[in-house]
Each structure stands twice: as structure tokens, then as C-alpha cells.
Figure 1 (spheres, rainbow over the protein chains, first blue to last red):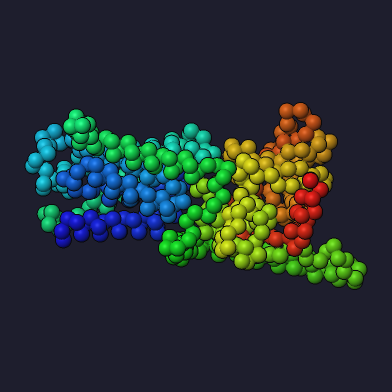
Figure 2 (tube, each protein chain N blue to C red):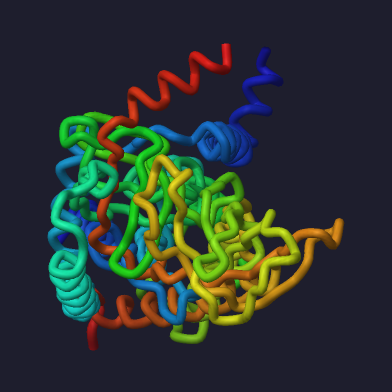
Length: 171
Length: 273
């Protein structure tokens, strides 16, 4: 499977799962799974960063349409896409622009992937829940929501990472 | 010019980010205007059909709860039927026009509940089915809110737990009337104000809608007194009331439309002028 088709498939699956299933789920009223940010996190590293931003923006916008929350997901996911290259650069100091053609999220070590996924999920949840300022919940609930959703999103991402690993890299 | 080009090309990542984030925030803050957000955004065209399909999937998630509610409701209906039967035997045979049905009952399904950023409930019945603005909405267990926006096929409901909501209610035991409002603090706890202090109220009393309300039929259950406080003047109660409707699990609701609603509103508006 080419990289392009893989990414399109990933987008479709993640998007449908998010819209049809996960928008319904809230654990204990505070934890929401935001699985679709996987799509942005797993985008190939070699596409230009500004293109990643635009892809993330469009993705968030589509999610927002179905969530009736125009701008909320878009703002959060765009920020995640903005911070992404900085996290990745930190995690692999030897990373250079030239030889990254074959570096993908999949061949990161497990702890590196986990740090990357966790930081992205945390950033997304912080922005998301701070921006939804119209909920009448207090600060305490917002903090609970951030913690719960970050952990839940993180767990779902790790599961996804191992379920849908490309066959070529499994060994 | 060349310098400008250089600046743009070296900073393109940051500039694109700024532009996109600005657009997103603009969308967010223009759209989530708390007071004007009474449009049914997403229910037209392609998105509408997908949302409807999503409802099909979601139905499975709430089957168990819906069933439980239906059984409870059935029991409630049987009970009132029995009472009615009894009263028919007991009371005088000629029927007073006052007791005849003044309200149309429309069954509707909640297709989108209150969400962060959207403090309204959307249901799948609209003007086509006879829903009107200012109609009341009741759930299986108690009142839910009032209709504030109607499109052809859908309506928006302002829940009783909305800072702008104001519903006429009565303390059932004493018959004193008050207003049901929400201070925005605790989910499920609404407040009843304007009941004078000389009324004898105790925890556990029921609060129902009263006959002043155009939205609800007289005596629809609203909530149960949970805590008794007094307002700043000390002359009136400020009751914390636990609402009976479970807002997190709304599925099917009933819209109560007053048959003469248009006529009454017209009359009241003409008096204002």
C-alpha cells in the first residue's frame, strides 16, 4: 500500500470512528476520546510542515461540522500540528531534513512514540477544554476533563498504533 | 521585494499557522455566541443525512436505558389512567370545558443533546409537525425546557438548566407560585425564586408547573425541593430543586403545544403596544 493510500484510509477510518462512535462516549462524564488526532500525528514527516498545518485544519474543520462546534476542534488540532515538528525534533536529535525520507512515526522506539503521543494528546485536551468556555463547569471539572481525556485519548492512540501497524514494518 | 519574499519563505510555517489559527478562533467566537446561537447548523444536505445515519448507530447505545425509561413511563401512564377512570366514576357527569385537552402532545426524539459550546437540545420535530416557539418540552420523568427555535424539520430547546431559562412553577402543597431559574452552578440543581417566606415548605416537596405557564400543561412534574435557602432580601425563599428529568440521558421527549398559543401570544403582544 502506498503511503498516500495508507493515509487516506487512515483518515477515513479515524474520521468515521470519531463521528459515529466516539462522539457518543464519555467515561464518567469527564473523559472524551479524541482518536482522530492520530491522523495528524501519523502524517509522514517528510511532507512540509505548512502542508501538515493545512491538512490538520481541514480535518479539524470536518470534525467540527459534525460536532456542532465550529472552530473548537479546528483551533486545537491546528495548534497540535504546529507543535508537532518541535516535539519530533526534540525526540530525535540526529534528525535532519535530508535523510528523513524513510523516517516515519512507526519506526520510532516505543518510549519515544509514547512521549510524542502523550504530549500531543495533553496539548490538544488542554486547548480544547480551555476554549470551550461556555460550559458552566468549574475549573475543577475542566482539570478533571483534561486529565481524563488525555489519558483516554493516549490509551486509544497506543492501541491504534499496534493494531494498524503496516505489515512491512512488523517483525 | 526580494527581502519580503525571503522573509515569507523562511517563515511560511509560522505564518500559515497564524493564519489558520486565527481563522479557527474567529469561527469559534463568532459561532458560539451564547445568545444568538439559535440556528440549527448541521442538519441540511449531506451533513444532515450523515447525522441522521449516525443517529441510527447511536440508537443501539441507549437501548437499555430507553427501555428502562419506557417501562417506568408505562407504569406512570397506567397509574394516571386508573386515577382518571376513578374520577370519571366519581365526578359529575357533564364535562367542563376547562378540563378538555388544551394541549397537543408531539413525540420527538432528541438528536443532539447539550454539548460544550452549544447549550441547546435539538429534536427531530419542527414546524411541519406543529411545534411552535414557546412550547414546552417534557421528558419521561419531568419537564425539560422550552422550544426557542424551530426550522421545518427540527427544533431547538432551551433546557431548564440554561442561565436564561425562566419557567413558571408552583409549590404543589401550598399553591404558591414562583419562577424556576438556574444559577449555572450545579448540573441537575435548579432554583425556585419568588415564593414568599410565609409558605410552609419542607425538603422533599414537589414543584410542578402552574396554570400561568403557556408552555406546560398545569401540574407537570418539575422537581423536588432539595435545599431551602432565602434570597438576599430575606422575604422570599430561594429553593434548590432537583430536577426530575435526567438531562444526560434524554432520548424521547414530548412537546406540549398549547392549542391557542398563537391567539394568546397575539393578545398579550397587543396589550404591550
